[in-house]
Length: 259
Image (cartoon, rainbow, N blue to C red):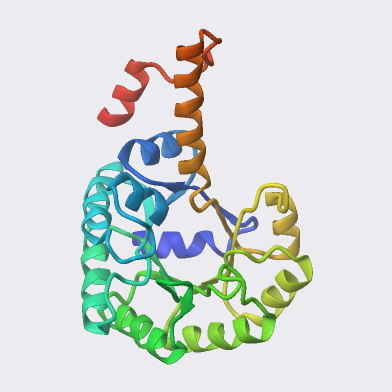
């Protein structure tokens, strides 16, 4: 079974795929060591670590470089490629083929655009079709940004999802949806695995499983939590406050890199 086939099967198991999002090699290695069967990336984390903003199409090189590194882990991984880093279907298809060649099991492709706008669904479908043509085994998670951009309603979201599935997408990702009624509609009406972004205080993994969600991802949550933890530890050092005692040791991090 190929990486993509194994990854695809995780979307159809007894339980939903709980997919944490890493931003560099060691964060992915730590998550793999903690028992997660697959890892995704967060475009915010990858872009921010490279010193560029998310969602502007500026982190292509960082994303490809990370794919090269993640291949060393021997784990299932899916890459967030923002909107494909190009408006040219051929270029997006070539990128997908390159990532598949590096061992990626899937990609996440969003229809949000810089400035808080949505792509024309027909043009987005062309990008998806190009990916499917150039990397036929890759799991294509088509992100519908209607709720993420505050324009969410079930009808518009379902119309876009239908176009993207017809173009060859394997799953639909609706980040920002929180209302259980809307989630139930999507689970019922979308004939493909539904991916929901975990929202602390609004969701639990168990409840999303009960609703029929097949994939739950953390997005940028873990990256933002790591920045918060680093600043908290630095402030404790500065202020003479206790520093958490359960921080991984130098040797533990070295082992993660060496494994």
